[in-house]
Image (cartoon, rainbow, N blue to C red; front, side, top):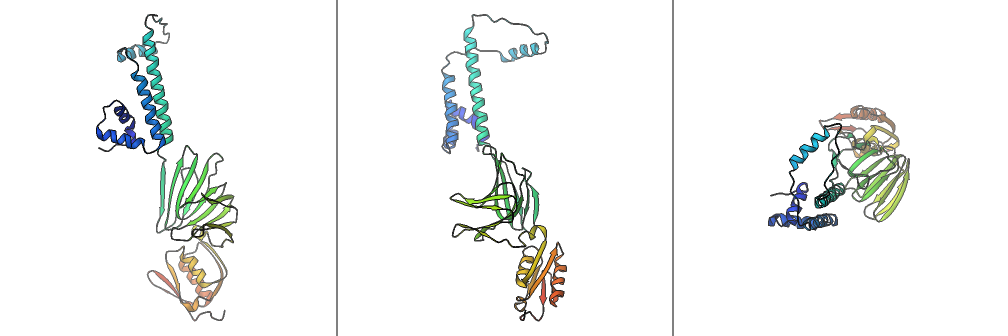
Length: 334
């Protein structure tokens, strides 16, 4: 039989009362050994159980009849005073003990549930195309292709936590009393009221952060890292475990905006930037790699982009089902 934390209270009760099956006893013993919080929770039940067992005699009550009487009084707007005979002090003692046990159980239960409630999480995955979404805290996120993002909120720590593999742009709904943290396999980016881009593909040797607005702290558990402001770019070297500040490239956010700006850029760099964003790839021969280009594109169709490049450099365009091929004499003299 499979047990879950949803029936843990009932199992603990059976365990303490000696009525649990061997399987149930083993489950409770394993559960309480998992962490200190679970152990304390079982100890709290044990203490309540012992105190309850110390009461030797219990009065038997007809609870249905008592509730019926009480309900009729609640529906009587005038109500009436009832003087209780002073000859039954033990009954009140037992009621107080029972009420105390109930209160302690309730408090312990809700504290435990609050501390150990599962953190609700959502997952956003972009495989073959980019995806824009809004996280539960109101922050906007835009995922590049081949990116996986998992969001959760830790109520106890008041922390929004995003685990990222790939590349994503964040527009944070900043809250002073809550933290927003991006975890890129142990490299962290803490929001300080900002919009920023994180590039963290597992196969890459670096994690890169570009801050568009506001500020972030870029760090690891054992390295305080660097503080980045708007326009700043930080790079973490996974191998050397070092942080550095670099000059940001002009087309870092092109996967999101589809805006490209090239100034005397070599054609191979232009093609690489375009192929990183568009599904249909542009292919050039080695004789064209030295060609240079100054041009801007703003959310243009890739076929139109290829035509503009071809006309600018006097090249020919040939297309297949999956590629756009640029051909020409070359630009060795440029």
